[in-house]
Length: 112
Length: 115
Image 1 (tube, chains in turn yellow, purple):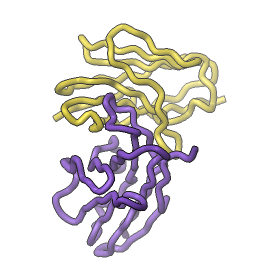
Image 2 (cartoon, chains in turn yellow, orange):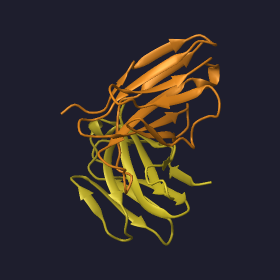
Image 3 (cartoon, one colour):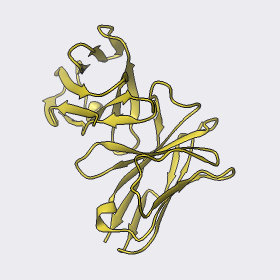
Image 4 (cartoon, helix red, strand yellow):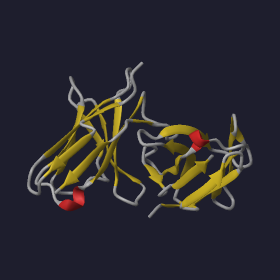
């Protein structure tokens, strides 16, 4: 069975701190890894990673994938209170490319 | 351009009743997916539908659960004779074509509470 493990499960930081969220996976027929941000509503897409070693960047957020070691990290620099959310990692694998396997998420709380 | 619309946002049912959850995909999207998020768990795939077709229901419980996406109208996830264990958030997602690399657009979810 495909498995996605995120760590830490929760994290509390002060505004301005830099955080690193981890995602490791064990899946068959890996296609892509995705990061979503979930506030108290719809998960919103952040990044999709398919190749090792290529950093994806959007503002203060960046992510990279290591397909050899089977993990990805999501970095957030200069955190703001608006970054408080649950960050979900999901892996797309197998014949059903729509079948995402999600981790339980990392709950990030940014305090002023 | 409205996103994926789900209703109701919150639904309370007693054990044994039926729950119907609706999902309208984003404009231009013809592929719909349902995911379930149990408390303290990650989202889990349930079913993938196109108009009038169930493409993959491998994640659906074998009994009491059904889904449809008619030619007209929203996709509906139906749970018959609900039990407490059905309490969860049910998320719908859509994509313009079969999501080749997994980029799905999610709705805000319908939270079902079974008393």
